[in-house]
Image (cartoon, rainbow, N blue to C red; front, top):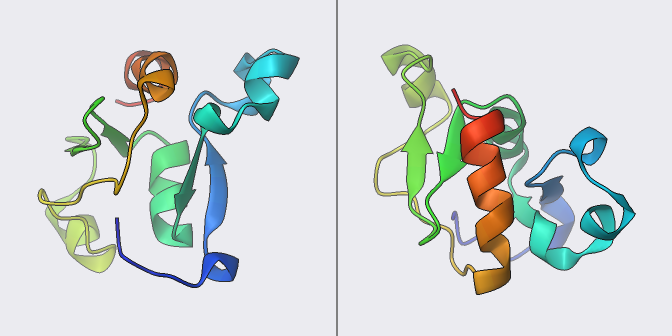
Length: 98
């Protein structure tokens, strides 16, 4: 999303939360995203999610001021998604995103 190349500054975020996943889902790379810490925080709490295409979805709960502080723009896009991400993203949109 940000183009940040230094992977050590990114967080591995489960799409389908650890608590809701079985052991296979916890370990598959398709249940994960590399996000900057701010976006990881928003994603884990359901303030942002993603369409299967990788386009960002922003919750109505995220105020305009918070959008500005966290630099959440409607043009944010995951760099790459895989067909195997689809079920995990659908789970996140239906169960975590508000």
